[in-house]
Picture 1: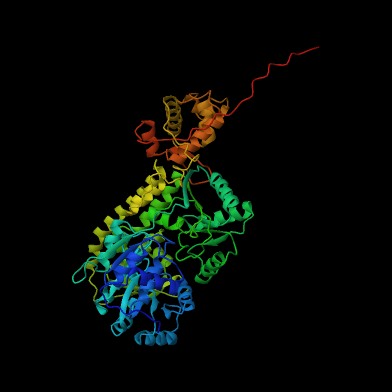
Picture 2: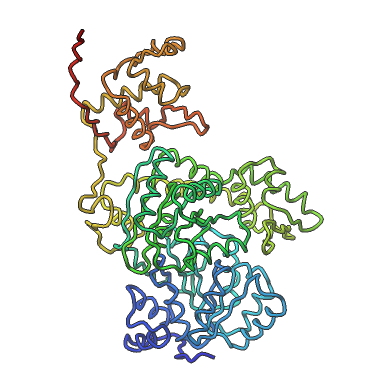
Length: 633
C-alpha cells in the first residue's frame, strides 16, 4: 500500500507539507493556480466542485489528495480508452492504482474487486456503467472509501454539453458509501451546469454542507484566439494550408463525420501532409490506433470531430482550427485548450460561415427530441422487448420508427433511461446495445421528463447563441471567455486575440452611408431573384450585362437591374461573400450554389440589424487607360 498521511477530516496539512508531498510524488516545485486551495478544502473534509480548463492540472488535485487520505479514492471517468495510461503513469510513480471497465475479463475483475475490498489500491478508476451493477454497488459498502472523484463531471448534468445517462446511477451509489467526501472535476461548467452537478450529487443536501466551488485557470494568454470569415470551402482550405505551413502541428475540428473525411482528404491531397482521421464511426480499435499515433507524433495533423480530445496528452500542439462553428463556448474552449499545453504560444482560429450554423441547429434538434418521438420509441421498445432484452444498433431503432436523425433517437433513449423505464448496455467494441425493460417501472415518469427537456432545448439554443455572440464580440475574446465561465481573472486587453493584438485588429466595420446603399441594392437583388439563381446571375443583373439570356428569363425587368452598373464584378462578388459570411445571404446545399436572402438579410436591408459590420473589399488598382493607337497607312 502506498504511504499516506492519514486524515479523517479536520485541519489540512500546511502549505509546506503539501509542497513536500507534491515534490515527492509528482516532482513539481510548486502548485498551479487553484490547486492548493482545492486540495486543502478536500483534505479538510469538504465536498469540492473544481472547474479548471484542459491542461491546467485538475487530475493532480484529486491524485495528491488521494495520497494524503487513509483509504481508497474512486475516480469515476468516461475515458475508458485512457484509464490504462493513467494507471500506468501512477504505477511508474510507485502509486498503487487500477481500473475497472468493460475491457477487464471476469476473472481479472473478480481479482481486482477483492483487492479493492482489501484496501490494496490508493486510486481506482471506474467507468460509470459499473454502477448499473447492483452487486458492484453493494461491494462498495464493504470497502473503506476516503474520496469519490467524479471526473468530467459535466457529464452528470443534463444541461451539460456532453451528458451521459450512466452518470445518473452515481446518486444511488452514494447511499452505499455515506459520508464519503466528493470532488467533482470538470473543464467546462457554466453556473447552470455547476448547480446541476451539485444537485445530482446531493451536494449541499443535508447532512452534506454546500460544496466549495473553485474556478481557476481559464486565462490562457498563450492561446491566440481569432475568428476568420470564410464564405467558401476554398477560403477555409486556404486558411488551413496557411496554418499548417506556419505552425506545423495541430488539430482541425469539423462538425460531422462526412466533413471530417472530406477535409482530411483535401489536406492530404493539397498540403502534402499525412493527416490522420478520427471520428465516432471508427471502431474502438481504430480510434485508439489513430489517437496513439497522434500522441506519438507519427503525424503532425489530425482532422477530427468532437469525439476526439478527452484525455489527449500531447503538449506541443501548436494550432487548433475549427472548420465549423462549435455548438457552445464550452465545447470551443475545451477544444482550443488542447493546444499550447507546454505554455508556448498556440494559434486557435475559427473559420466562420453563417451557413455552418444550420449544422449546429440540427444537432440541437437531435439532442432534444420531441415528446411525440419519445413516445413513439417507447411504444416500439415495449413491443419489441416484451419477451426479453434486445440487442440492435441505434440505426435499426431509428429505421423502425421512421426517424432519419439518429441523434434524436439516441437522445430519446437517454430520456427513457432517465425515467427508469429501460436499461441499456453497450456491447464492447460494437455499435449495438442491449435494451431491456425495467420491471415495475412507472410510465407516468416519462411525461415528467418533458418539461425538463423543453428547458434543456432552450438552454442548448442559448449556448449556441452565446457561441455566435463570441464570433461577433467586438471586444477582447479572452475577456468574453473568462466572463462566460465566471472566472474573475482580468483580461481587459490581452494582446492574444484578433481584437487586441497589435496590428491584428479586425477589418470589420460599420458601413458608411454610401456603403449601406450598395449593400441594400445587392440584398434587394438577391431577394427579388427568389433563390433561383447563383452569384454570377446576380452580378449580371446588378451590372446590366448584355447577356441575352437575362431578357429571356425576364431578369432585365427587375427593379434592381443595372443599379450597380459602375461597380466592378469582382467587388460585387467580394461583397456577396462578405454578406454570406455575415449570414445575410445563404447558399443552397447542392452543387448549384443558388443564393437567397435570410431572415437576417431582411433585417439588414431594413437597417434593423444592430451591430452590423462588414469587411469592405479594397478596390482593385486599375491601369490608366491607354490612348487609342493612331492608325497609319
